[in-house]
Length: 331
Image 1 (cartoon, rainbow, N blue to C red):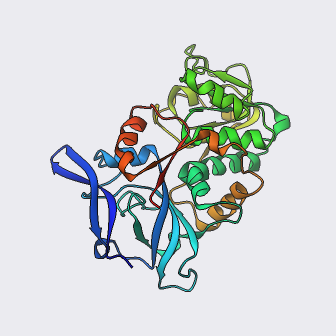
Image 2: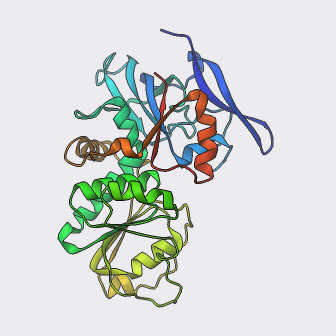
Image 3: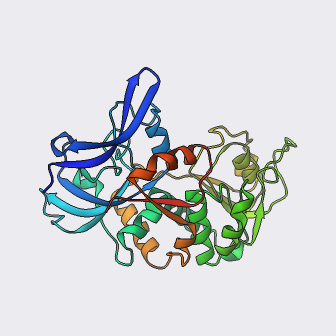
């Protein structure tokens, strides 16, 4: 087994200034944990970008290796639940935040963070999903649990060209929902339509500035990845009994609502967390993503890079220039 391996390392040079580069890292510098994993693939998420530029709200201490997602094979396990050579995935918890993450060729983590690769997925496909796919799956599951079926009407997906948004669109379309997607990127229209979107609206069209507490009911449900005024408008535009699964705040963490959607129309705002979500729920959703919910068009929303190319991709995701999912190959 290698004692030294390659990893993207972010270093704090002085207050407020950070650098990132490929370095050779010692195995002994990895944190404690029951399972050592040789990483084959990771993925790029907005949170990874924040960690890579020194955002202390994501990562407190540097030097650090980001990567909140990882898929690979077990190199060593001190617990019987996992055996050497087994294919596994790790998403969320503290991986890539304050624990060295998937942008290194090895990670060592607590066994409670690890799940076996579901049948029906390759390691690479699992990272096309990654945290974004798990989040999209949790959102979909929450809507279904609250009675939002395809027959109830259209479902709005905000941030449609992003990771969670594009995977939500693909999953909902696979399940027969009429999907309305919000995006500010005209170049994303063709891809979204190929994923099954019935209608695309601009960010401006998705925002109502009238100040009315309730609007014309349009949506049976929604998956919101951005927060702010788009979430506020969607909540006011739900049909009776409608629900929104809320999982993001890239636009704003604030919403401006009265209680009217809740007490007059029985609407629900469902908070979705994919970081500390308990293991059995993760496994259930992963099995659905690997089976009946698996979209046929994953390749259409995916690009692949290696560690050498990753730094440029990090800049692009922070500028909002990427669409869909970026898989990082370490194998």
